[in-house]
Length: 457
Ligand SMILES: [Zn+2]
Ligand SMILES: [Zn+2]
Ligand SMILES: [Zn+2]
Image (cartoon, protein in one colour):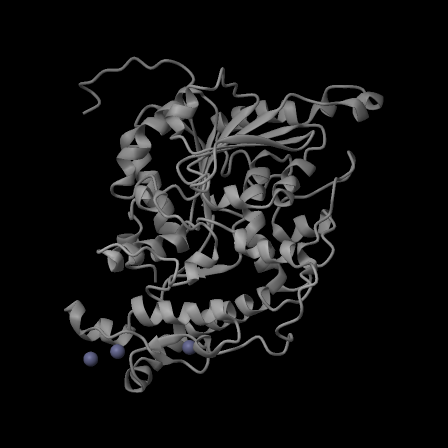
């Protein structure tokens, strides 16, 4: 089903670096797209890559903060609309994007030449998306569309109208700090929401909305937490257990001290380096606070590093959310930022790369210096991918390019804390992904290996 997605994904990160618009509205607004002479090609790549590696989540919360008494636009029984006739301009824009850049799946199978493929302008009455070029092709492709995509698109249609309906989003009212003895279980989203007492997580739709944002901090927490879904001997290797155990000696100090000292404990700071940070750098701080709450004794310093970690008008900066959560934003390339850090310590430091596309075409070379620097630290490096093929592609690139330089920490596995909301590729509605679908981890080898160039050919 993801056939074809790959060919767009290498769209270089430098391309995105030059975008001036970082709001999520920009993904669905034609007006804000670049007007270069090769605009069509640029837009096409931008739109497609934005699905796999969203650049911003600001739109989701921005409106709410600006108008606290936002009025209800859509009732709960009125969430399904033809995108082209949606009362929400953003959704209408989305239809216009599909009209302009999408592909009719029937034309796509009939014709070899791109010129002969017509744009989808016929709206499917069941999902509300413009899916085919004509009523004739709609009927011709009806079975394939309804067997594979229509229900998915209908769900996305209703979810997106719900998110912008103006109803109070109670599922985004998260629990605050947890007690030292509160037992949270991180086996999966359901158990996590339940044991952490999330108040209004009572529908699949709420789970989809919330998981799309919480997938970033919770993918990290799931690796660190003592009730991690990833087990030693299953997904976690022996070397991986050493790395994770080192971090847990900091995160769980009560295993080492007497009970009455617990309330005063403040451990060393855990540094999380988010290399190539994009959308995760735009998440509101209360989303990241959920990570800190899970480890009540430990301060976290999250480093959002990479060309897309800041809006173009922003300077690198550090800000403190509270005494246990610190953010640094820097748009330097990681290998340059690396040189500014005094020391790395496998007990307190780890790396996270969200859908980096290490193995994708021209990105592969660009990642090399950064990956090498991260491997040198001997701190664990965790990586996510948006589907099976994306993950496989990155893993293969790492196995080829850093052969003999790393140990496995976490074998590639489905991420229990992936986004449950699908993101659809507007360039080809047959393709959709889940952010952080899979996860894996490696670490630089801890001893110096004698390098023998001959045996390494
Ligand atoms: Zn057609
Ligand atoms: Zn035809
Ligand atoms: Zn449909």
